[in-house]
Length: 435
Image (cartoon, rainbow, N blue to C red; front, side, top):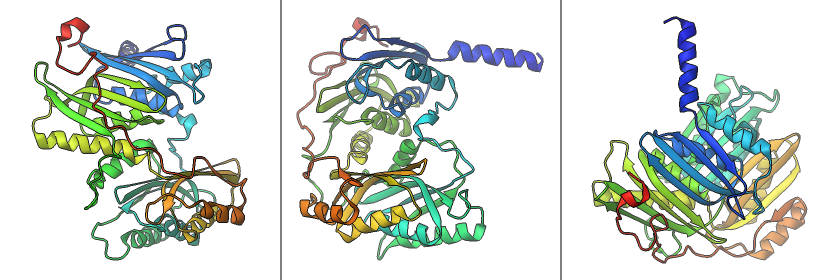
């Protein structure tokens, strides 16, 4: 077989095994139904969910099921305003993205494979003022922050930052400068008396998904372990894990407040923990979301011990909580200029605000910052503080996107099994065509 035959055979395999996408705007009155059939393999569900999430589609319901070597995924989606999806370009983007090996949706800005930026990854112990100190170091070293996303959870913090040299606007290539950046950032993260070793990584950006990378970094930092003395479980997502011995599955359920990207965060964590989802369902209403997944480890077995099941509970709770930081959402939109991020984070620090998450983007001379903040004790923000900040930078520049109060606690009731109806019990799968 020559090279031409090899190429033809490879193209045939891709065509036979490529996902099939069917879009139906008539099947449901309130949502667009997207059905995706893919070959059953590790990570296939995550790739589909990632594409839909990066297109900012809101999932109101979802069903996943495997049959032999195929997965069938059905998603009920709307736009941010609760309307059906009418844009044919979005459907074409879904098909095109799923046909590629990497499942990258470049239009969302989540992946930045570029020689114009330098990638910095940071992991360490969270504390008030940390983000301000990191930004100050980068500004002093003439590094311009192009994009950044920062998460904090359970006293850990992780950041993915894309920077460029302020003088050239391109990636930093000077080894001495890169070494100095790494050294100074390490010193900032180390803090005083911190027993955890911070991690600072500097590299050229590759094809990464920022959300998934942050989940991996926080998992590696063991943020699923709660700090000592925090025993209040009433505000946490309600997660259960139990075995279904008749079919060798482990069943994972999670009840929480509904929010964007919730399903991605859960499926991402299950995938990174080396579990395969064989069947699942997601049901949401205006405030609450219920997820249910039937999983096995990649070795083909369900969970094998109570310790493993407890670890799954802790990790799913952490996955749901990381992006849902409790605090006051703030949004800034203004003309971009060098040192802006350092200035804004310094203003927040000087006014006693503690960013629990941040998402920074710059484009076409404009900067957009989104923060979720508390006071330095982790308590709700005093409205007087926001008034003082508005006086410093203007109310039109920095806007409050939520109420000056903390969000409600997670629901605690025991969930019902939506996948099989009624309170869960291992039913006969023959009735549903599942195996």
